[in-house]
Length: 142
Image 1 (cartoon, rainbow, N blue to C red):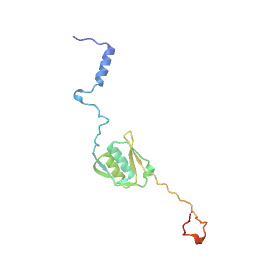
Image 2 (image 1 turned 90 degrees about the vertical axis):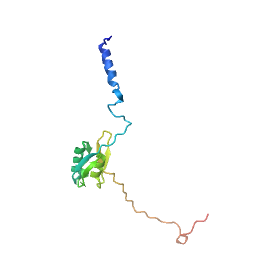
Image 3 (image 1 turned 30 degrees about the horizontal axis):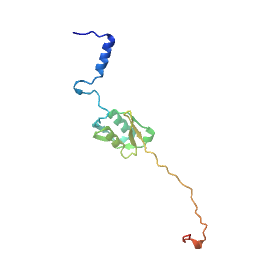
């Protein structure tokens, strides 16, 4: 015997069924607690200007890469050739440049230069004494 459901009840039933996991415990998306192994892929980025190498790598990896072209002016990359994760390939392209890569929360990457150390030049200091030259080197008595 079949019961006929009203339209609101059919909609509710569809919503409940759609929210259930698939049969056999299969999941449609990975758990947030489960780590996913990084994917290794072939990269072939030619040596050359740093900005060009980074653009080639971003296209090959399908990633969003943000950098300031002015900071890359005059820098060169040895490129990368081989099977690597995206992070490894980025580190190889940046090797020896002093630049760093930071991964953002949205999955993109930001190329930054390390902060310059703060250097300060102090004015000369003159030290004088109030002791007589004959008292220098003596330990004061209590």
